[in-house]
Length: 570
Image 1 (tube, one colour):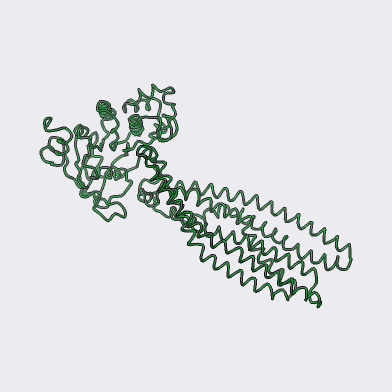
Image 2 (cartoon, rainbow, N blue to C red; image 1 turned 45 degrees about the horizontal axis):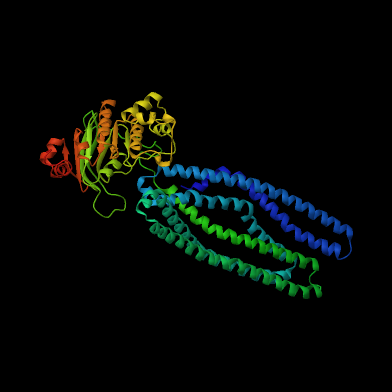
């Protein structure tokens, strides 16, 4: 996606207006030394006061006109650059929401934060500077050279070597700085990722007292950023002095040779003064050019990084759909009441070189049925939930889903806001009665009602002011507000006691006779309460059927049962 083309079409008029103002302002600045040379040579040198006053008034008028153009380009540049930054942040955020989970894994959270903030700021500042200063710098450079060369043909002997020297320095700098600043942005990604992981796991760090290790990890990323930034800065540290040296050598040569030329009558004093002014303007403009090159190499890297996100594929079938719910494709190869069919499904994570996460999974689920998914750690239970939500597409076989899907994730995630606002994520149009009904089914209504402000109680970031069990019950209520055909419970009752969990499961059966429920669990007691049980081992289907049949036919399930409940109960 050429995102810059889109914004160019929107802000083209402002950009062109700003460029026109900059060009006119530069023209006014370049005209001043020429007028000053006329004032000196035609007025002051011969004692012609009217000529001095006429050119002096003309210089004041040109200065006022240049100031008017400067104010105009500042206003247009600020409006265009701020609008560009706001639009780009909005569109990039929308694009990130549509990315597949595999792309999210590839970019990493810290890198996406850097692209949303630092990289966009780089582009925004560059556009603002380009419309205000950067475009003026090359115009002033070229204009100063042309105006100085046209003062007197002899000035070309000085101008040409200066231009060649400065051009060589700029070319070398461009070639050396770009790869270095690309490494700077990558180092900044690592620093942001390190800080983001620390903040996300700060409680775990405190619990295990891993402060020194985290400090060392952050220091390593910080030192790496410092090192690559210093290496990039070394090139820029040489650029400006070399350009200043070239221009000042030209000035020294002009003063040395100009004295002889004035003495021989080949050049006038006003032309010498104008030449020195043009060279001063050239030096100032080259300083701006140095800043342009400094920012350009950063902006080029940022532009490519943002373009990577815009160029990523959107999630198949679920781009821009609300979280927790998807429109899923119907199928006709099963019974009319069926809502879910796995047909020899296999899946491998993108970039994985090891064993497939799932292989040869095949089963079906009908309306109103409950399915328990159980297996040892790493058997593929959460991967199966991700496929049901179509966070990933299957690698082999076919997956058919009929209806809408809602999930209660393994880790309860709540957002800053009231309890009611968090529940409305499930259905923003839900009534008070529907909210309370869902909360009662999730066994959350009583503790919510006991809070000082009830459903209007504020929840801290991540639900820090709630217990684990309270967060899980609010998550379940939020999913129920979707009124889905398929509800996925991804080991989401781990913080609930057995009695509360039993009440939740009974309420789920009562709330809808048509809703199919997939319970991913490590508790055999939870799986036993389901109509069917899918047993996974090392990504393969070890068994499928009711509890009694699996106890006879599936050694894996039987071992899990014995380890949790015991031979006496069996």
